[in-house]
Length: 144
Image (cartoon, rainbow, N blue to C red; front, side):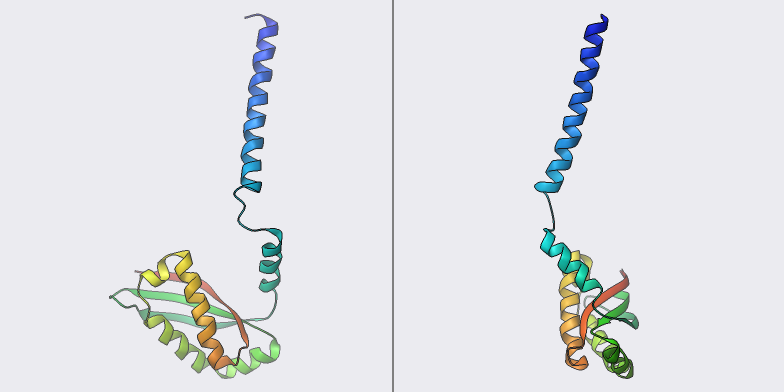
């Protein structure tokens, strides 16, 4: 192989690698994107909207003989609501236990199922908390 063909081969390989990497990154960014900019700003803004109030650790028997152990924290709208909800801690824990013990293993295994559980907990807890809870966070979750 002479020097000219060696240089052409090296340039072709580098160009192919560059196009491959660029194409992959472009595809991931523009075709397989998961959030648009408006959804990203909504997620960022909802994360910082209020103080976090730890509710506690829960261990419940699920329907069908499985069990769930989870640690839950809720996000509240402001500090006044946080103080108020600390006083109603027992009612919140009772509502969480009621919701969780009526679930099956399928209701907690997948990310979509956990998202439905999160929404249900927000709705159920807000019945006790006068709509002062904005989100439910699963700090840990173990099921068997």
